[in-house]
Length: 263
Image (cartoon, rainbow, N blue to C red; front, side, top):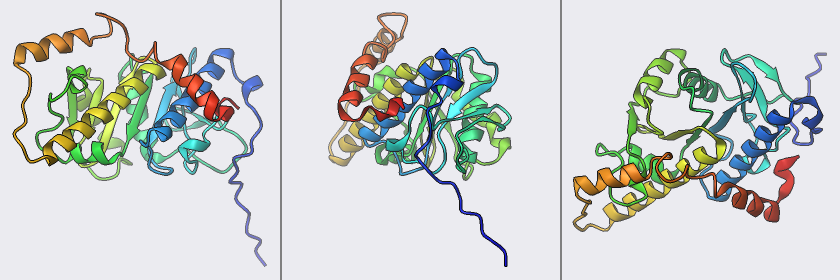
């Protein structure tokens, strides 16, 4: 009689702190925090979607979530290290693997954009709603004006085909925000803190747009010169890189709620 192997699906895993560099461990802790924060603000979709970060000091590897964990379960040690070809470089002793779509999307951007150290992809109600609108994300609010450039990528079914990587990269260009048509949102950032700030603000801008358009009244936008001025003021080199100042406070918030993301 054949004996079926019991899958090792567990969240009880030993710490990887002593198995990785200090820089990688710091990246792991911050990435786990980003997952928890996305869940805390209701931007997760059960086990779907992904956030990734390049491994500091390594060429062509990045960390991503195990496909099967809720965002609220992610810890520094549960993250999986893979390379740009999709090979698992390091993971805990469990049977979880990376999401294929996560690899296709994130590896393409990490390979193409030197400044995209962190990539965040979400399926939120507001983000998906705006992704269906032919008008895209409108310059309705100061929050929306943070994004001077927005890329748009037409839906090509579930992103499991490597052939889609080229168009994803082309449509993102040098923007920080990519609206995946009929799909959701994607942001990049030079750090986890800055990428989280980008997705938080993109989601907020989408929420406001959906609310304003649902009010069935005439909607106004600022004049073109004010839009351009605001875009300029939100550039990271003009005042400050948004997200960096907030990050320690966000980590303190998580520590008060549940510090297990650091495990």
